[in-house]
Figure 1: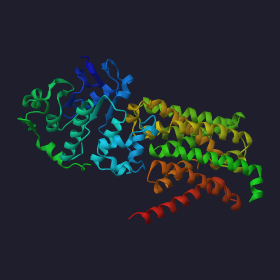
Figure 2: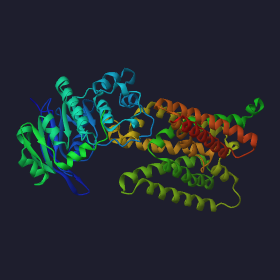
Figure 3: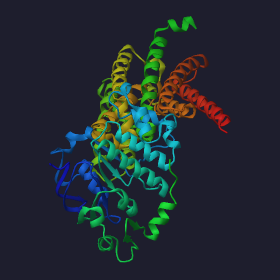
Figure 4: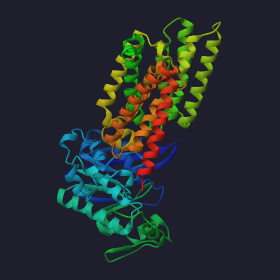
Length: 253
Length: 268
């Protein structure tokens, strides 16, 4: 079976400095793949290079075609949504912005799918961090994408909210066959919810099936000796700093 | 009042004011969302050089100001993309340089220049039939573009990456918005003047924001407030024998203060 996504020898440089070097991998249909690595390892750059949002060298093929030809087939939830939070735009209006035929828009269905139907008349600037991420997910799902890209979509959400968010992603994957590629710092969530993993530190450290690839040795290679990760059974224990960060999130929806 | 409406100059001023109110207030929604108030002010002031070129060459200053400002918008766009300077620095350089060029060019002409005062502060009597035709035709064309592309323009103003993922070409639409904004500002100079024209971009939409709980309501309030401001300003300036541009801006400011007080009282 042909891979859904094929990345060959992908490199990105910003002002002469390498952000990503000669990365190659493929993604199979209906998989949930996580991209992990320390800060500055090129995770977000990898996602943006695949989506054509930053200039890059190498080849990226989505369903054997250039990504620009496949835009209606993919959804994207960005790491930051730097909008003017005082701007009066309701959740329903925001979702409608990306619809080519707003009158035939399945707003209710999409919002219900991410548990946000009750919020459709609320202003996006008044949503909590978790609620906003769910709305961004609904926005990404509007055109029923075959592949979904999530860039640290749960940053700033507490652990319970993260669990809910990942459970929604897993349900979309299982019920609708959506392939998911996500950048994440939440190692324990990655361990619980993903099938495959790409470990990145500017170049590819390792990739493969999550449980067999995400070993203590690989984690130490990525995050250093004192990262504090331990892997046992079906759990990957959080380092202290990440636990503190996740616990201080803005709340969830 | 009926007699007043019979006066040809008043008919031209009212029609121009209504078209400009609709056009500039609509653009103001994108200008405030993208935080482009300084760009608008800079382009309006830079139009002085364009008008001065027209006066020197004995061409219609409105036409030369339109061409000059549109070109300046293109230059600002490319400098923003190609240089590492922040956009406000680029606008600051272009705006002051163009103003300086305008002052130098004007100084080359001898004697008092009443026409120039009209460009600086607006002159309701100065709207001739060709000016009105230009305002209506070009203004309608820009409004049609804004209406047809409002979904893409709003998405682009909210988040550039998200717009690109929705199939919008961000560079192309940003360039078009810059050029159209420059043209709309120059069209507004006849009524409001170089110094005050950007007020009608900013004040109605800011007032509307205080009263709106959705984008749809914001658009309706913005247009309604802009049209009321322009009409009330034109009539008041006539009856009080005061400069039209300044009275329009002050009318808008009064409405803003009233909306602010109303929204403050409504807030728990």
